[in-house]
Length: 154
Image (tube, rainbow, N blue to C red; front, side, top):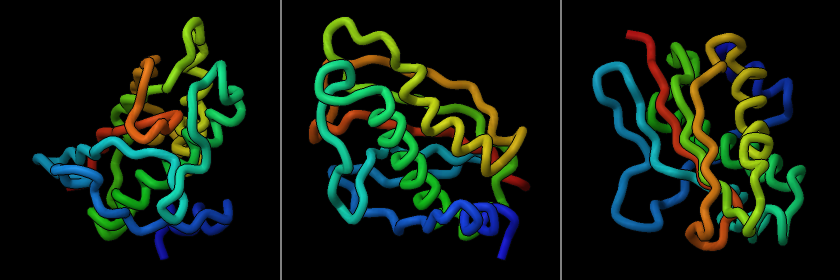
């Protein structure tokens, strides 16, 4: 077992296997030493844990839970793609979308749910650049969608 696997176990997190893509894309692709993931949402066993807009249907805390679950799903994609999360050198960037009600402007606080998990697991290598963008709609009425770029060890 690797270091990251041990940390996940300590946190009580079991990474899911990636679900089948909802459209014509692949879950992750490696170019040189960078892995680019497709966007993911907050499903557990194929069902969204929350649906709706932040600031109307959901609280910031629920949004943070959705972002954390989305990151768990992304880590599952990385695990399946790389075979071992200890191959991760650095989390480079997150691009996050928040399904936002009109006037909702706390997107960065919502996405902290994902960022905090990465920093807990990877330490300094989990600190990353990030964009947290409010949008009026997301596929399947998911509250958050996140994609990421990860540098892997040569």
